[in-house]
Length: 94
Image (cartoon, rainbow, N blue to C red; front, side, top):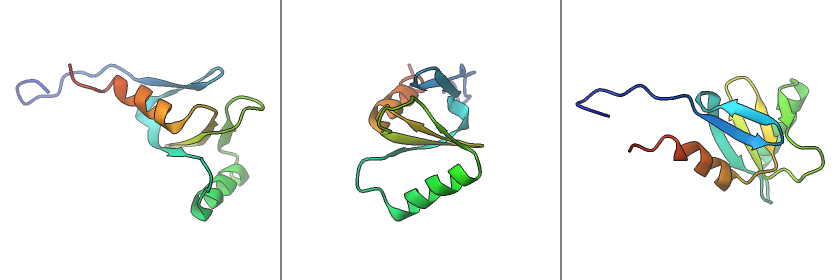
């Protein structure tokens, strides 16, 4: 923020693993999938799968995080901490 006005912000993209990159503007939440996974989160994943909006990144790798976006969800093999650090790295003010 400069002189009470926000400066133009560059687009932020987040690499979720393999060839999957998403816009940071669409991210609602980055959630850890370490055990134990809550029943609510299990239900959310099941519903996203039924609605065909769940995308698994990577083939056989263990999924460590779920990234909730405006229109879909991603299961990522990259930890939620790493994804979060990548996302906020570009949003910090100079």
